[in-house]
Length: 241
Ligand code: IPE
Ligand code: IPE
Ligand code: MG
Image (tube, rainbow, N blue to C red):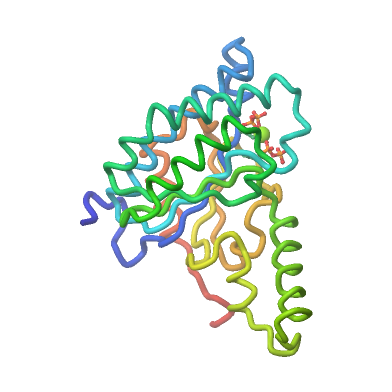
């Protein structure tokens, strides 16, 4: 049951997405290497997952690694992949006990063996869990996702007799990584940057965007609650008056 809600239940978002940005700058301000910031960023995750579970949020989607992030220096990419494995080995049991269901948005085939195997284990273990739907966008890009969906539908037209004129929004949505999930209500980006960086372009069609100045390692349930208050103060019109 939802407890200690920061805003009234009727204003709570169903689907929160977070662009976890600013690890590198957080580390730089402390005179440390970027990987130090990524490690701190990993630690910031758990309290947010727990807050979502406590507040009865249905879906939490976080941006962990974009298709463009492969262009970073090799040692940074390796550090990020290593942290992924470490995180899963340390936290998976607790997430599982709390009923969290993990899902990956993105192309897992493009992920190196060790993190891929750890992730596949986590997906398998938690697949029937009834609690928070926790999606990690990994090797994810929205343009690639939309193109992939388009190709899947084109194939259905060519091979299964679907008529292009009959393709619906529901068909399209079912071909996205987010199949079956509600659209994003609230998109939060940390670190003061105000851009979408190839994240959930389709799913954010009517999302409210909240940008917070804190770097991701400093994002806490308190900062999250503040973002929710900002969200609750918005007037979502969906094109109406
Ligand atoms: C976010 O922090 C984490 C990832 C993109 C993996 P950054 O690494 O982008 O940190 P900044 O934006 O350079 O400070
Ligand atoms: C977006 O952050 C990707 C993730 C948070 C995983 P970036 O730091 O890669 O985005 P840009 O390059 O500032 O747009
Ligand atoms: Mg960044």
